[in-house]
Length: 507
Image (cartoon, rainbow, N blue to C red; front, side, top):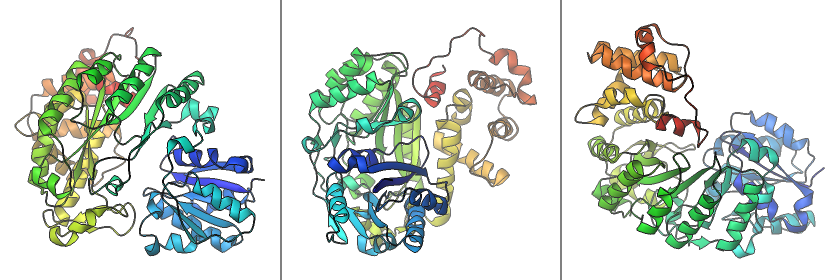
C-alpha cells in the first residue's frame, strides 16, 4: 500500500492533472511510495473518500482549484471524520491565498501555499519521519532547473485517451487584475534544449495532442519560433498543438512558422477580455487593439490555425452596451470562436479593489462568479450569462456555422444573438441539456417563423450544417433540403485537430 496518495477532482476525466504529475515526479526517494489517483467533480465525495482510504495511505495530498473547491471541501470533511489519523495536505491556487478564511484549510492538517513542486516532498519527508510540520507552509518559487520532469508520469492510458499538458514557461509579465498572474509572479522559462528533448520523448510515446499551459507562449519570440519549428519538422497526421497567445504580438518570424503548418494543426487561445479602453484601464490591462485586429484577421484568413478568443462579462465599469460593442468588434475580426466568460473573483487577485467604487458583488462559493455590478444589475447579468451559454452551444460548437450567418446577419451580431437567446429562454427555460435535434427546431422557428427569413435560404444553410456534422436524424422541416445539404459520400474526413475545430473548418 502507498504511504502517499496524490489526488484531485478534475472537471472531466479527459483532463489529466498536470500538477499531480509534477508533485510525484519531484518526490525523490519517496516517489515509489506514492500513487496518483484522479477523480471527477461529478463523483460523490463519499465515494472518492472510500477509494482513497482503500489505499491505506498515511498522507493524502489534494490539489484544490476553483472548479473543485466545493466538492473538495466535502471530501476533506468526510476524511477527517472517518480517518482522522490520515494526514491531509492541501495545495493549489485555491488555497494559496486568503488561507485563513477557508474552512478546508482549517480542516486540513497542512496547507502548502504557492508552487509546491518541491516543498510537498519536504513536507512528506517530515510527516513520515514523525517530525513537526507547520500548519501553513509557504513554498518558494522553484525554477525549471530544480525540477524533475513530470512527463514520464503520463501513463499509456493518458497518452492514448487524455489531454497531455506541457509547459515551456511559468508566470506572466502582465498585471491584469482578474488574474493570479497579477500578483508579481516572475516569468521563468525552461531550458529550450531540455524541453524539446522531453517533447521528443512524448512524440516517440505516441502523443499527438499537446496543450501548452504557458500563459504567454509568444512572449519570447525566439523560443516560440524554435518550439513551432520543432513540431513542424516532426509533423505527422493528427498532430494538434494548443497555445495561449498575446494577441498583439505576432512578428514576421513567428507568422512564418505559423503559416507553414497544415490546416487544423494549431489552436490559439487569445485573451482579448475587453475592447473598452476605460475598462482596460480599470483592470490594468494594456493591449494594442489595432495590432490585435490585424493579427486575428491574418490568423483567420492566411493560416489554417483555429482561433479561440476570450471576452469577459462583468468587468468593473463595463455595461451591457459596451460589452456588445466589443463583441461586435471582435466578431468582425474573424475568430472561429468567442468564449464569453463570466468574471470570477479568484482568491488573491486585486480585482477586489474595485468592489466599492463599481458595486461588485460575487457569489460566495466557488467559482465566485460576479452577480452584479453598478453598471450591470443582477437581472441584466443573468441575461448576459444566458447569452454566453447559448453562444457556446450554437456558435462555439461548430455545429451551425452556415446557420450562424443567417442568425447574425445585420448591423449587430450581438443584438441579433441576444434576441435569439432571450426567445430561446422564454420558450424553454433551459440553458443546458438542449439536444441538437431540439436546437435545430428552435433555430428554424426563430429564423423562419419569428424573424420571417426566407425558408429556402434558412433550409439550405441548416441542411448544410446537418450534413457536415454527419447527422442522420433529419428533422421533418429539413427533409426538402436533404439533397442540397448532403456531402459527397466519398469525401474524406480529416483527422486533424479536435472534432469541434474540424466542424468549424467544414471537414
